[in-house]
Image (tube, rainbow, N blue to C red):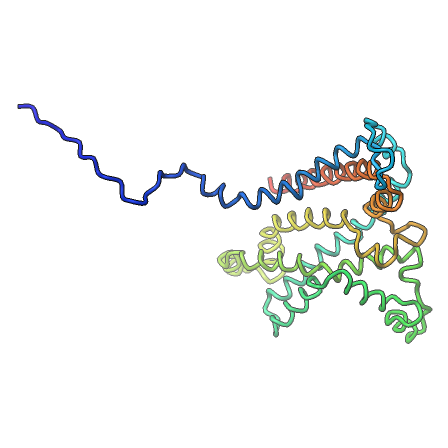
Length: 306
């Protein structure tokens, strides 16, 4: 005898809605970010790229005539572009190495359990919270040739004062020192977080094998920090290549243009000489240099990982 199967239609609860497809909720929450990302990053990048192929002027005189690759050809043959790019690379070399090494030392000192850890953490990171205008005021007073504290200390030990910001031999080193004091706290924080994530059983196993403090540092701690070091190095190189604020406030690119970074040249070209099209082309040439250096760094650190 055949059995009959009845289909019972369950009424949908009042107020219920059609289920959303998977992932739609995530896009809904991401929409505000994507809107601002497009308006304030993608659109300006597109406008800047278009301007780099024109002779656009800040004054608006003559309109914007399409000139093709003329701006890029001029940029590649512009001696000021290469000089300021060399200054930027030199500053990057001077600042990146101590900003990575000193941050690691500071993090190790705090991680080893020094007395008053909260005070050390605060003092190491506090300078990173200061705006550039405050940093400028502090170091401009320290570097004063007549009344500055640094030359005052040199005078106490019988050494003639130094033109920290006016002597070509010392100006870039002085700017690197300012950047080190100002920004090392961020790298210190990244290293400290990475140290706290190292499993304790690695140190316990090394201690059971008879490894001392230095051997544990070289064989356990530093290898575990390899990825963090690679990340910090890439971020620091990119940040140093984009230097502008502290140099512009302290030296205006002097003396004789020896500390002038390429971003200051782009700024002067676009907003002082009113050549927005050419300034856009130079900025995209510099953007290409940053991309190449970043990819090279990532390639080097990935090989070391392998």
